[in-house]
Amino acid sequence: MPHRFNNSLLLLPLLACLGLAPEKHQFVWEDINTREVMRWEGDTAVIKQGAQMQELECVLRIDEKDVVFASESFGIPETWTTISYTDEQDLAQKQRELKHKAGTHGIKMQNGGNQFLVDYAWVITKSISPLRQSAKTIRSTAKRQGYRSTRELVGAFASFVQTLEYKIPSDFRMNEDSEKILTAGAMMPLETLSKKWGDCDTKSLLFASLVRSIDLVDVCFIVIDDHLFAGVQLRAEQDDHSIRHRGRDWVLVELSDSWPLGRIPLNHHNGIVKGKYEVVDLP
Image (tube, rainbow, N blue to C red; front, side, top):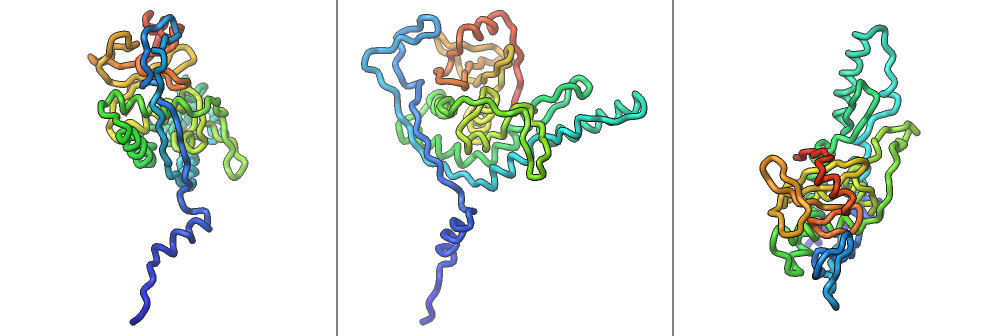
């Protein structure tokens, strides 16, 4: 009888040797939303004696090829931002063309080409599919620990992102040709997940992309001064910090550091109370 070989069994070690197999990344974190808070005294939570937080652990498979592809799809060459023109009409036409080109790479052009910002909606839309399996793994991890409600699951995702290291990305990256690529100080969420660090923008983008990839909850961003945090469309509980937007409650989520759902630093909350913020709607 002829022997039959399972090609798939041979392929896996071959891919690993070639560096093509997805890399395993282990994540262990504590969910700050599971501690029992007696009361708040300013920004300090008074915790019930002996209260502990739920620890969560999962392994995510991240393909480096996907990380590189996501990274290279985002940002525009710095050379694009220098425009040569003959007259005002020519300048206006070239600015329109640049605005369109930049928009296809996740960058918004404002103020006649003098300012470039991250297109948050573009980044999240492009990141939903690549992050869906990771989001399913995180959700399954939480459910195995007894998480059931949407709020509980959102808390698991928020605490996961919060515990990544806080680090500010550069405004630029260099491509293979040593060309300067303008990224407006952000990274694609898959890159943030792979590197395990980010700042308020990048961590909020990762959080929004993860929860939107599995349709867990709607998300918006709230911009105040030089800071950004998220709002999630949940019924506000007593003592929650929240806003009313488009006829719905949005519970505020600080993702730069470990804060429970519905609590943000009071210095930022004071700005919210005074209406000194901008809401960015997301897909």
